[in-house]
Amino acid sequence: MTIQEINIVKRTWKLLRDVDPQLLGDVFYRRLFLTYPSVRPMFREPMTTQYHKFVDMLSLIVSRIDRPEEVMSEIAQLAQRHERYGVKPEHYPVVGETLLWTLEQGLGNQWNNDVKQAWEACYQTLVQAMLEKA
Image (cartoon, rainbow, N blue to C red):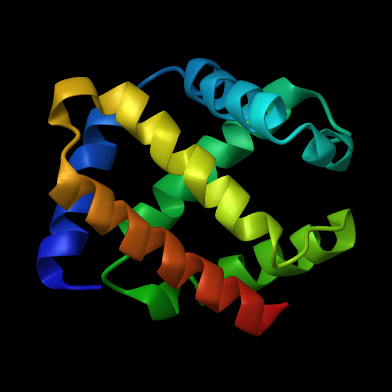
């Protein structure tokens, strides 16, 4: 990721991170399950718990995006959990598409092509690290 992309991701996440995790998580997972219902069985715990995990992990990743070595152990653990849940490499584009859609909804008029490209780069960096650690 470029420094500009890192700054964009940090700036835009700052606008969203204080949104109620239930709201942000609900928007994300409703879209995910509506668009890709086949992934719903992978989520066995209460969704309110999952909403918080989703927002907390994004916050952690974004806060250290310029220092990826500091978040690699968490990414490795996340990759291992996803593997146990049955997540396959082909699921990552589905989640990425849903994440970008959710961010676009949340950011409204703050969303533009530069923001989209920055978040795409962020997500691809995360996915690459997760696939290497799984």
